[in-house]
Length: 314
Image 1 (cartoon, helix red, strand yellow):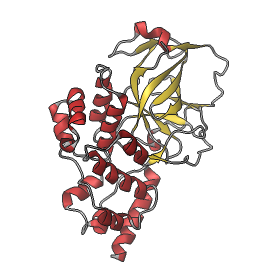
Image 2: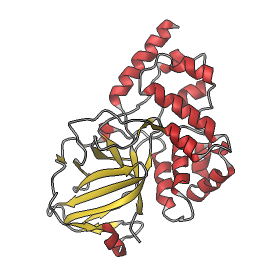
Image 3: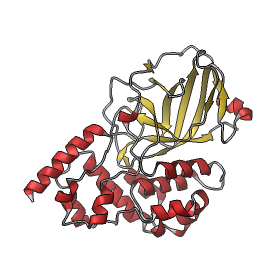
Image 4: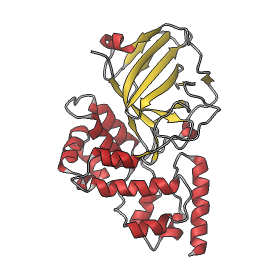
């Protein structure tokens, strides 16, 4: 058993250097074979959403004070040229707007003002489903943001959607098709008892240990109809702040693959202010946030999936 624990420890240590949480590789089978069945072990090795700091362009960046004196056009005043398929059509210049956003990794610290956030695309085995979930929400104003967030946490925690509360199953049915829901009801990990989980994570380093344990607790709470959003949120969000990455301070600009620059200024995990700079040489661009992720320079903080829902004062 000691040998197995050592193999598992080495696997997780290498894993944490590659991603914010990363993957539990094949060596996990050696360390947990007596605790989980083969299907659970295979599923536990893969993360549904894999977007992390390694996916960011760290070379083409601009300092936080770039464009500080510029006049920024408010996207809320440009809603007339917005379409659900093409987004905002933006000419060269500076723009700003605040969008509703989502936490894509439970068991991490909430946004803080000590770390910069860079652009990266949504990626992972469940990327298409997560993107569809967020994109379709735009067409259903009757669905509350917290309900979509619960479904996203259910996805990242590998929760069986067929065991969710009737309310959440109804929301999922409005936002996803039958094939997506079927996929989310099969590629799942069962809730693991406290004793078994303690054995499984006893020698794991952080943040893998915390994330695995919290995802397991979220699965357990998702299966209880009387669990509240506040209870699940308190599990998903760690208290305190992540250590800052001084190389990428708050407000740093990152380059989007379409040639424009973007900075993310999260107000919370559910609300992200964005500032956009379109250089003259790029010409006009289409800005449609869904599928974009604001990735923290600190790997211990939450990745923020962006939506198309712009927050404007009434």
